[in-house]
Length: 208
Ligand SMILES: Nc1ncnc2c1ncn2[C@@H]1O[C@H](COP(=O)(O)OP(=O)(O)OP(=O)(O)O)[C@@H](O)[C@H]1O
Ligand SMILES: [Mg+2]
Image (cartoon, rainbow, N blue to C red; front, top):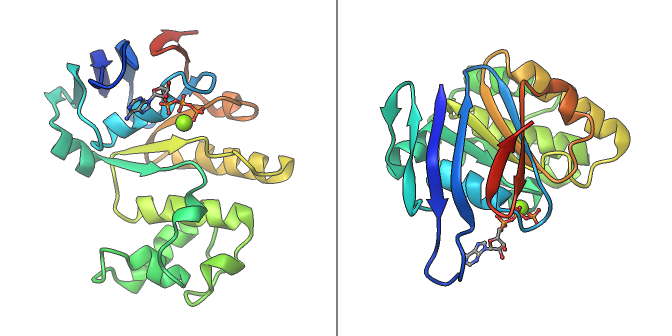
């Protein structure tokens, strides 16, 4: 279970806090969806949950234990908005092995299968993949580390209608193994696969 208790983020440079006391709970193998307009604090919240920024106040717990931001870096796998812009490997294999050169072929094949890319050969150039395939690869890059919590920032942004539907279907399938927290300004088909929904507005989160 993921527990956020009174999470506040107020960097010195801003007049008001960016996150203003967020409380939420998400059970394992559920998909939580946080919906809010641009500038409401969605990406900031995910960055904190991924251990990339330290909250000013409040706590984050998983399985009853409070986590430091180093724990969070291990627990969470974050897929940024437009992840294909940040691919560093030339081929699919290179991208999946970045930082984990020891990963065996079996694990790589399993992960590609999990995201529906089993037909892709390892030496495919990342830039030759379709937009939808690139999103799947970005998911695989995180899943291969086997994080407990998968954090997704606007996963369907910039995809056409049919790819959005396919991606939502994949996320719905992934939650049978993983716990997912998705943030978006445009929920569309993601609403159908969400177990919990919250609205975020100016750094405040409300369940609906
Ligand atoms: N490091 C920072 N220092 C100062 N202000 C910041 C910092 N990071 C984000 N902000 C501000 O915090 C607010 C929330 O930003 P954030 O990127 O989390 O919003 P968002 O909901 O993800 O928006 P979008 O939908 O456009 O991606 C914005 O007003 C932004 O200008
Ligand atoms: Mg954002």
